Image (tube, rainbow, N blue to C red):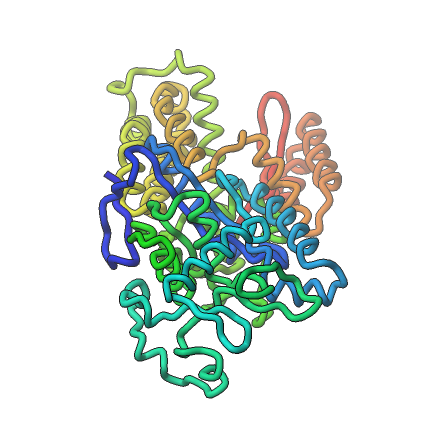
Length: 492
């Protein structure tokens, strides 16, 4: 049984879906007016893993993640750029797809855009007005009345009376209560807007997700997800307006929230000027290194990011692919493997860990998608494989011990998107990106390796050792084989 931490219940609960074997999942997406950064990707990655594991466990997942393409930030940025707001948002939706595809994040089943769901928004706002949950204010905006919904604050723990603290006279002139929030914002002449019975305007931030979730998943569904910063006011407001508009509760059975990615204990934000874009990171390192960094922390925990942590993830990824190389070699000659009960200690360790891996992995992931524990089990296996690979006797005698490990790599690739490449493709990509980051030229390294090969052929061992030391000082690892010498850029 899968257990999920439900923010609304403040407890772990068994996942019991409305339709057996099927999950309806809505996740709040990006406001598309700029490039996606690694903080955005933390939320995208968290729910990518959730979806992948649910599917592995046999669930059909209806996954909806929206694009907010109508917003004041978009309008302001478009005005600065001299383009139409929807043109700007369309551009950054394309850029978002590019970045997430590069990172290996699965596309949602449906990716709705606000601009394409204006009729649903207008209809929902009108229902709320008709049911006395919303009102047209003197400034032309339509507000939701939080006092009309007795359960307001259940998700965040906030109380309506506390929201009066710090109220301003300017707010009181248009709102009945300072906590009331905009469902529909009136548009000034020439501004982006749509006609509605309550005046020309555009959707407020919160109503869009309610309208799109209802359109694609129904008035009630299983899981609603997003970043921890969305608990209040966004998700609190979604619950209020959705349940008041439909007359049905709960809007979502489970509320899941991922922790922030932080830089030096600060949340990443444009105002702080500490943005690290996805495309900049994956220009420097293979995308799987970033994926590995994400899954190494439980999705609900804060994720501190640093250059050192990324380097650690990259070094760990090297070990994954060294192990995979050993596994693939063993699989290619599986018939030569000795029976498990005749293996030495290194072989027995690999066989034991590999044979129990899938069950341990699923047990960890079924417990609120505990990727940190699951990846820990995987690296326990990786270490055992690499010890086995370094033991010439074990490797020659017991290659069959590694056969169950191939399934472990398949599972980790399926759910985490880590270890999914061929070792050759990975090390080639890593080589190119590390040399680029270090400002080195592959041709220069090739020349040194070739010179060393010539020295070895001439039995000039002193010269060969000198060149190897020179390569080692540059962080280049040389691998000799009967077919010749190859090289990789070492991660220290």
